[in-house]
Image (cartoon, rainbow, N blue to C red; front, side, top):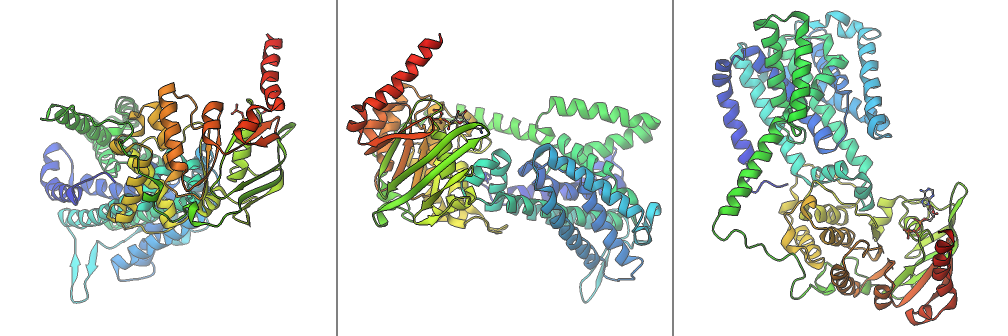
Length: 616
Ligand SMILES: Nc1ncnc2c1ncn2[C@@H]1O[C@H](COP(=O)(O)OP(=O)(O)OP(=O)(O)O)[C@@H](O)[C@H]1O
């Protein structure tokens, strides 16, 4: 998403691929090693989309590598199919279908459980290949006699017989694979995959169907694996059974870690290091069986000292040098102020898709009998709550009164134990959080839930994409930068939360107050018709509070909002009506003046103080 110069990466890659067979032999790489690097590089392109971009660590890629390779090899040997590339593409499709079916199961779990399921899958495929399917796969002998690469063009057939010609063939397909992978990671789908890697819960809360996007990444990775498996058979003239081995998956993971995950080139560079060293240790140093031990030590050292891998380190270095250069350039050091613009944009400047002023009056949200129990703890009990279109409602209550739980139920993050929620007259009780966001109800979080490795602009784009594209769309090859409508929406959201000058800053570079504003901006950029803000002022300095209250006032125009906060002065200044929660129940509801003078409210807060004092 960040490259400003179109086709720069593609051009540099093409030049490097042309030069490689002339340069690498002088560094000690054999022609066979160079070709194997390309096969691993292709295999790794898909894996990097899955692991580096989506954050899903799979140890089961050998299943798809073996499936695609064996299917193509079987067609070309046992079945007598004569079209080499057609066989490879069929193998790729079969691997993708298998990937889809496996993904449906494996993606039901996350983290270590997902990884463990993929390990089990790799083992199952290895067993099946060796036993029930050995008549098709050759069992431990593999499938020999796979023809050399060739491309049938209709009028002639291009054949690739020498190592150098095979290199040209593999380099061409690596380049095609890279161009496709670059398009994917630069597409809206690629942007959402990165968001899922950083914070899957928030990506879902912004309206994205994260399961479908993860499944997409899984299928793409399986397809790349299947294609690379087919290439392996062609390159070697033999489809080896060890393609299915767990060790193949492990080697892919280690090569990607060495080269750098989330870079696309990492697996290729990692494979170059890995294969070169394994050849060197075995053939030059004649280390015998100890070569794996030495390679293991090298792996540990590389991963410990280059946290982002080799390609990641080069990118970090480039950024450092470019940053220094920018600092010393004429005019540098004039940092645009990150605070409020002279005239904050008004609501009229925001995209009007779901602006609440366009709607009728009457209730936008009605909750009846909402109760939430966590075991023996009753967080919310029998809450009746109605908010009208265009209203700004405040919610206050002592710590533990059940305010956040109430918001979580309204946005369908947690299901109520009993009760009903109507939004715009529609029963949303028990719906998914992404569906509710798509309907126009979302919230900002008490504790920031941002996409930490993305910039401010990219964060807001993730939110805006959910609104413009819906829950799921498979536009793998479009570029969000080319959408003026989306750019305008992101720019407006950025200006609205006073972050226009910080668009290219990564979240990690932001001050706390800026992060809080971005948190609100994320919710705003989905153009909600009902916006819930959970303690927007939490942790802010007095100056930041004044600024944020101003901001909240400006965004509340033409919008329906419910705000929870402990800062009562700020809330009384903002809200038209206030609901007070105590011990999970509605204590009282009224205008700020009514609430200020209410004795029950005073007791609720003073009671808390007395309890604390009594406990001391
Ligand atoms: N996931 C959970 N599991 C068990 N108990 C929970 C859970 N979430 C909240 N609770 C309990 O429910 C009660 C209400 O918590 P909640 O966070 O909604 O209160 P709150 O009013 O938002 O508090 P604060 O102002 O401190 O944020 C508390 O007693 C809390 O311990």
